[in-house]
Image (cartoon, rainbow, N blue to C red; front, side, top):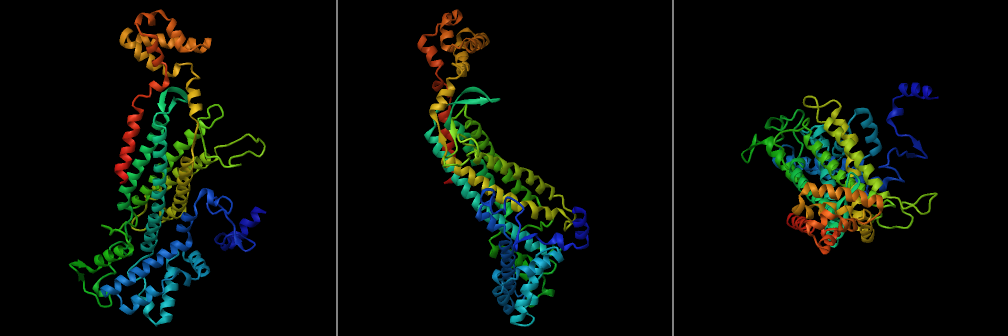
Length: 496
């Protein structure tokens, strides 16, 4: 059967060009466009931004802006500029015709331009021929992508703010809540839960800084013509324009005004096959979502039945099992980790797309079409899940206290060693405490009790009160609170 299908498909390439149909509707092949999974692995906002309709709307925005600017400069007639801009309406396009022509041509820009030209010519013969004047397919495509990324980053920034607000609240509430730090998955020394959250907050503060830094490099117009030289925008090829305007060459002035009209920066030079800006934003999102996954990894470990120190927000039946009624699975954490891992994988493809040939690539450019929409939709969904978990995070202080007591004092062995070290020497104290920690576990006795009985420690001259203070995890949080305050202060100054 498969052989027959393959043979038929090779004779009829349209089989591969058209989506499979069931009941007149295109099938959904990814979790992003799935009716069932779509709102989990993407968001309605990013789905709209990266839809065919919005991308095409940005093509028309480009054409309308270009027509207005060129009419103002005299590159095209005023009447043409008005009529072209008037007909740049997304609802006037025939999307089925656009699909068919894109499958034939290979790119959607020319089919859009052909429809636009036809509509303008229908209004007044010949005016439509001035549309798309001096532009090329990649000018529209790249500028539309930049506008889609601009809209995506607005959502990313909103989520970043929400995440930071939630973390700030947790830092303040749990600044001095004792918690066992884990090193190699073993209890290490006490920290505060606020300190743990402040480290995460500091990471997101740095992501905010990175976002602020990359936007000027990313939000840049692409309008340079076939090979990037703006050769087509000159007096010789214009309706009635001089070679210079306001002391600038006609082409550069047209480029500047177009960028201004679209709310983008003017490029220093064409970037048709210099894709570092897009690779940068993809890898920024990969790093950002990896930080979300770091939080989710810690949280799902803290949700283990044997740990129980924190939990995802409770919603009836969320994360439940079909066979084990007691289960409360870390489903949000699972989503975050899976999406972040997918973004990291696809971001590497964006780096691959940087290796483009000459002035117009044969293949690397199309990689971006495949992975960039998924990177953006997954990233925003990942951030949204993270914000939701942080805003409703359930923190169990009693469990944290109970787990600190599991080691019978070993979790503060460093504090005891340092307290004794100033009298009997650090290495001597280390060896004594090491042996006593081992004995504590084997004999199921508190470390404090064994310290009280040890002759060398008695000779060290520490009072019983001093030993008790050394063995209290709450007394060995170091500068946790000071550092939490420092991170909170940094956030206030950078976001004000």
